[in-house]
Length: 99
Image (cartoon, rainbow, N blue to C red; front, side, top):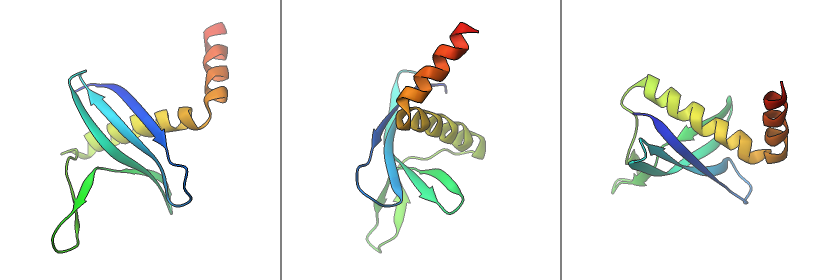
């Protein structure tokens, strides 16, 4: 499956959660509510989950392989960085187009 779109919604409140993402696969399937979280070793994504009756959280949707998780995380975090610094990203893009 090819990642065809990633959308980021920045979170205004203080805390570890920095943004929420939606990701589209093959222009046909979307997964909403992927959380971008600041951990002890940097940013990571948390897949959408719900609380079970015993208080645990269980993923609603998640990648089956570690390679798929890495591709999804890389795409989401790249888009997050662009959303966080849009002016810098536009200048970098313009510089690379001029080369």
